[in-house]
Length: 481
Figure 1 (tube, rainbow, N blue to C red):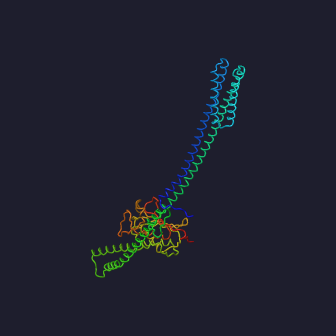
Figure 2: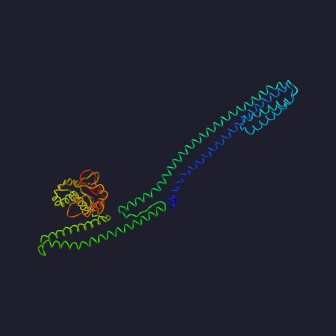
């Protein structure tokens, strides 16, 4: 049976709300029915107890009245007193008859039957011996028995009331325990249902968030698929369309920049060669002003050539899916060679180099790793002050090759750190030099390191200057003996 998926996010929320609320509604209805039943039972019990109590009291009072009427009739011989006795007898029998319809207990029914039989027997005896005073006098103890039977009915009614009250108390306690278990079960059920529907709702939202993050960092190669309600799936389809469009625009931008960069190299080469010919005096000796102009042309030509080369390297670095030319590399020797390449620039600023490099061999692309290290060293030289210090440390720790390069320059401002690896971004740190950078060096280094499944990051060690750390995974490296 396929899993039902709501067609809209709103329907999913409504279904979740209904499934959480439905058990609560059922529990409320069940509780209402049970409480109503207990209340009705309590009302019937109280009403029956009151009626039986009033009836038994009335019977006792009427038995007393009949005894009094018989005694008065015996003394006075007044016929009206006997008629009053007869009327009281009729009311006694009527009350007893009414109690028969109320009483539901067998013991009480037997007591009431004995009472009515006894009273009827007395009435018949009184009628038979109406003119025999001695016989009427013998009936007096019988009326006492009649009153005791009425009181016995009332006492039995009290016992029955207590028993019914205890039964209702136990039932109320049972209902209370049931309410507690229902509350616990509903709470657990609500938590379970809430967790399920939060997961159903949060999962596509997380997928959308991850998709947006991938688009934000420029990962356009993986198709975006969102599972969940149809409207969120449709949103995923629109994001996937956006991914394709961004990928197309990125490819077009890369092709355009590559084409422009290559096209600029030809006239730039001609300009630099012409400048070199002028500098060498091939077309004639230059005066001091002309030498100054040629020097400016040469410096700007060098800067333009570096910018074009950085553009080409950056686009090559972005193409990380291209196959790497992996081979064993002596990384410590590569680091020494890069430092030697910058020896003249460091000597011009009297920069001291502190090198601590363990012999480490890695599998990597020689050209790309060398460019990454060269850009880090070049950045350190660029921002190191006069008589500054550059520290380079190469170690093998916890299965990773770690290269730390730090300087004693002005460091990286906090507001620049999140963007320091962005292409063309140049921070607020002051730089004094003849050739201004392109802002691509660190971006290229990061891309090349990422192509080797490594990481390039800024280390916040609270020391003066900038501190960069290059980490390569252990699968790409090993220590030499």
